[in-house]
Image 1 (tube, rainbow, N blue to C red):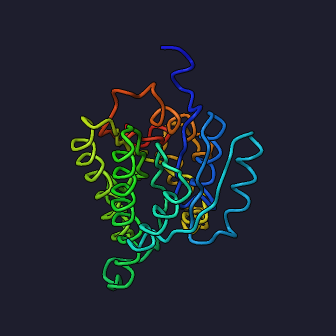
Image 2 (tube, rainbow, N blue to C red):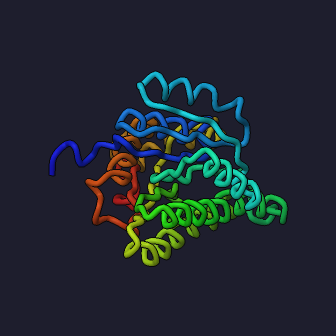
Length: 256
C-alpha cells in the first residue's frame, strides 16, 4: 500500500447536497485528494461557494440542480451529465433533511418529505449512477450518508431514524448486488456535527452538556473529521471494502 492508493486523481465525484455543511466539506475534501467535482443541490446559486472552494484547490467543479426527492429530477441530472459527456465514478449520496417532531405529531407530509429525500433519493441516485457506470464499462464507489440513527433510536426523529436505518440496509443490498460488477457501496455514519440541519439540538445547552458526556473523545465533530474517511472509501485503498458503515463519531457508538 502506497500513498498513491488514496489519490483520487483522474476521478469525477458527484456530491449531492453540496451547497452547505457536510456536503460542501466532502466536495472540497475529495477535490483536495485529486477528484474533479459535480456539485449538486436544489439551487444552483447556493452552490457558488462550493464551486469556488473546489476550484481553489486546482480541481474542476461544475454545478447542477437536483431535487433528490423527485426521481424525475434525478433523471434530468444524469441525462444532463450524459449530454456533457460526464460519467462520475464516485457518488456521495449526501442530500438529506430532518425536522425534530414527536412521533405522535408526525403527519404524512413530514414523513414523505424526510423519507423521500433521505432514502428514496439516495436509492434512485445510486441506481442512475450505477447504470451510467456499467454502460461505460467502468467501476466506481458509492458513499451513502448514514447516521447514528442508522443504529439507534433517537427520540423526536422518527422519520429521520427510519430513513437512515433504511440507508444502512440499502447500502448492504446494493453492495451485495454490485460488488462483482466493480461498484463498491459503503456508508459514512457521522456522529454529532454542528450544521444548519442539526442546529436545533445545539440551541439546548443541557443537551450539549449531556451529549458531550457520552462522547469518549470529549468534543463534537468538526467537518474536516469526515474528509479522511470519505477519501478512503472513495479510493483504491478501500478496493476490498464494501457494504460497510464507517462511523465517525468520536467513539459514541463504541461506548453505548
